[in-house]
Image (cartoon, rainbow over all chains, first blue to last red; front, side, top):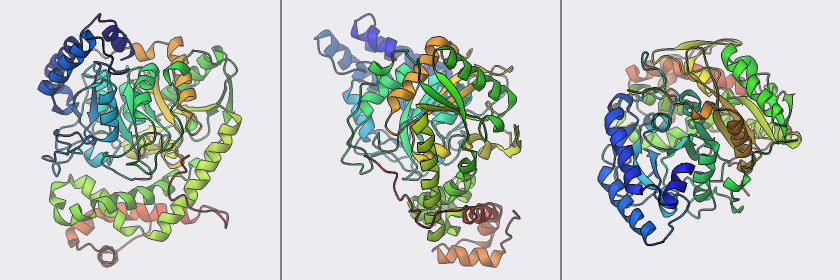
Length: 464
Length: 62
C-alpha cells in the first residue's frame, strides 16, 4: 500500500489502472478463494476516475489517495449491503458509512468490496456456511483454514485481491487470520479506533484494525482511522501520532519481553522455533530480550472471556434468536444460546478477573517496551481438523486458535501479528508483538524493524 | 475439574428464566456447550481475587 500510494502520488500509476488490476484479479481468483461477499466494480471505478481527476488537477485527497482496499462485511457502507456474514442480513443496506469507512474514504482510499467472515464474527476458524469457506491461499492441494473471524480479509490481502483490508478482533479475529495467511494485522488499543457502524460481537471486547502486507502499510491505514469519535463513547481523546514517522528501523536498547510459559511452551515445535528465531533476530538488531512469565494470569483468560463474550453476544442477538433462529448457521446459533445460561454474577466476576489480567500485562510492560509471543500455537490446520497437538498436550482447534490472542482482548493492549517464518509444509507462522496502551507506534516500530531484517512478509503464495 | 452434568429440565428452566422458549431438541443440542460453559464458570469462581477488585465494565480509555 505504501508503495502504491507513492506511485499514485507521483503519477507513475493511475488509480483507475490500480483498481482495474485488482478487480481483474478478484474476477480470476476469488471464485476459488471466496474472500469476497460483495464486489463493487462500478462504484470502485467511478471513485477511481474521480480520484485520478483530482490528482491531475493537483489536489491531494490524503495519504491513501487512489489506493484500493476492502472491508470485512460487518462495517456499514452506505448503499452497499452489509451482511455480517449472515443470511439474516443478506439484504441489509445501511444508510451511512461506519466511521472508519468514512475516514478512509476521506483519506482517499477506494473501496473494492466487502469481505467474507465468520457469521457475526463468532468463531476463529474462518468458516462460513452461507457464503462459502474462505480458502487459505498457502496450500492449493489441501483445503486449510484461513482463520477468523476476518477470514476474507486475511485471504484477500495474502492473495493480492486487495492491498489492505480492515478486520475486527474480539478474541483474535484480526491476528489469527493474519497469522494463518502470512500477513500483518494490528489490533489497536481498545478505544483507539471507533467501532461506530461496525456490527458488534461483544462491545467491550471488540477492536477494529488494519490487515496488510507490512507494518508500514498498517501504519499508513491506522493514521486516518484512529482518533476520537463522538459516535463511539469508548474512543479516546488522546492525539493520534504520526505512525509512519515512528518507523525508523531503530530498536537499539528497546526492552523486549519474550513470553515463554503458557505461550512458547504451548506452541508446536515449529512455531516455537520460528518465534525464538524472531526474538534472536530482534536481539541482533540491538533490542534487549529477556523472558517474562505471565502464565499465572493467562491461564484465567478462557474462564474470564467466555462469560463476557457469551452475555454480550446474546444481548445483541436475543431478538433475532427469538424470531429468525433457523436462518443462523446451526453452530453459531448453538454458541449464541449458551449465553442464556450465564448470569450477571459470573459476568461481573469475569470483569474482575479481566482487571487482574490487564494489571499483570501492564506490570510486565512497565519493565519492557513490548512483549513477544506466537500469535497462534499452530499453523493453518486442515479445514476438517477438530483437534490439534500442542506443546502441552491436545486441544480442540477452536480453543487452540484463540489461546494466545484472547488475553489481549481482555486487557485491551495493542497487539500485532506478523509473519516470522514458515513450517516445513510451507505454511506461515505468526509472531505477536504486544505494546502499552495507546503505544501502537512502538508495536509497529518493532514489527517494521523485523520486516527490514527479514523477508517473510514479502513472500507470496503461488496462485493459479 | 469434573464436568457439571445438567439435565434437560434444568436447561428448560434456565432458558425460560432468560426469556427463551426453546424446544427440547434445541436444548439437547446445546447441552455439551452448556456443560463446557459451566465448567469454565466453576474455574472462574476458583480464581482468587482481592476483596476490593472492581470489575472493568469498560476498558479504561483516556
